[in-house]
Image: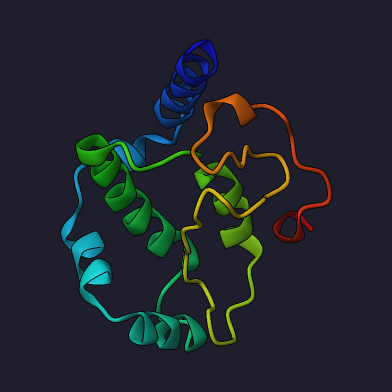
Amino acid sequence: YPCSKRKQQERLQRIQSLAPEYHDPVSPGDAAILARPASEIISSVNAGKLEPQDILVAYGKKALIAHKQTNCLTEIMIPSAEQWAKNCKTAGPLAGMPISLKDTVAVTGYDSTAGYSAWVRIGVCGAYLGR
């Protein structure tokens, strides 16, 4: 399965190239964010009491921990999310809240394989979530 091995190596390299803060243990501040309901996190972002970047780091760390335990991540979109978090709207129903997407959702620049390694690198053009 050369495609799947290549994709696994790519994913490992993307994880290793993340900023050092994502490789640190979950801090008490991260744990406090992760323990809050999404509605409270969003309200805090709306009120300017919590920064989207801090939320992303907390959830990013948790996702990487889950991946180490279960191999659950197919694409590492954290660098793109960091750019988004710097300029995202801080008002609205999902303000500052990171989301995860199922592998069947097409995002421009990322593989969407629905679990089929043969579809790696086929590419997605004009994906709705990439605009």
